[in-house]
Image (cartoon, rainbow, N blue to C red):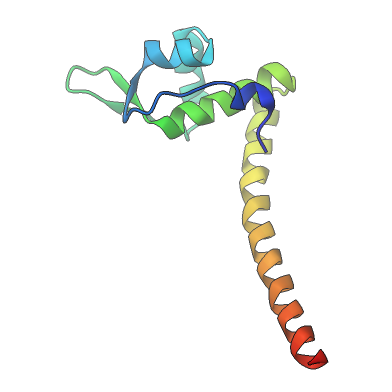
Length: 113
């Protein structure tokens, strides 16, 4: 679930972003982004031939999610990691549950008709 502060940020439609661009988009110093790379394994930018970090749009979105959890929701890094892990699991479980409910409703509908 995204917060208004996340959806207000417009991420340009580009294939890759340099760390300075990500910093401007997220409103974060590049040192924070580099630190988060060490803490959150999902942030794994590609490297150019010159060694420069190249972030995908999904990386930028994930960085914005982390920023929201740490800065707005006041999570600790450990808490944010746990939340992000459970968030992913909940989404998969919810999809499975919805599909089971759908099948049950179809069965009930067949019994009633």
